[in-house]
Length: 322
Ligand code: PLV
Image (cartoon, rainbow, N blue to C red; front, side, top):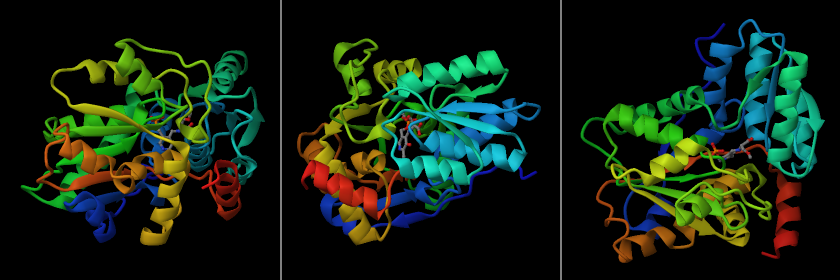
């Protein structure tokens, strides 16, 4: 079996994004991972550690963690059951089935699907694969930053990192990676959409907050509570994490601009991070002095996502009237 399931993804300079930010921008193209998103790094790692002898894995997901679990399980010859909420688009269900997974639709939001996955793990003796809250996931995601350091070469350090937050697994993994390469002084801009903003709510309240509902269309950011580790990092005096929100409309516009300018289609969960560039939010943070005027390049984690195709894009455009 392969040593690991993820690829060393390209780090591309974006001249078009540079125009919006005023400093060079590098895109870490996690959309080009085998399962369509960064999730394969952590989930591949976790499955290799925990599921080698498993009679089957079960993963709760908005879509992409499930895609990664189904991919890893297929490569390992282990059956996979993926539990998604009814809010996940049909195209995700189809793609999961194409990966050979059994798909179960339970509840309205990810938290409902997760309760069912935990129940199945217990009753059926399956290995539970969490989508964002596990040290092995963070360890697996961390290699993304090691790769960036190698691609940028000695002496070049990002001025800031821009990423999306759902349950906080990507954030924890990136912080782990920044620690590994000695970049803990690099500020992180952590983006969510309004209506899928559990990290922002926790940062504002100074404690973990469980949202009443997920009202954003960025369903893959739709965990009602962020993981404890991500919240703890937000409270740490050694790190600078700036939590910001965009609207669904801004995230969708960003998906379209990215498609036009970079010729790559990503989902809304990723659009949330890209919108920080296109909406002028990063510029604004610099003007306000909340983000230092970037000397080093802005590193954008293009987290990717499989919950999108032209039909879904048209559907969202109509629904959000952009
Ligand atoms: N999506 C998770 C959680 O959903 C999932 O089950 O797939 N970008 C993309 C494309 C994602 O799919 C996700 C997470 C994120 C960003 C955010 O990552 P996280 O959850 O580790 O903060 C409910």
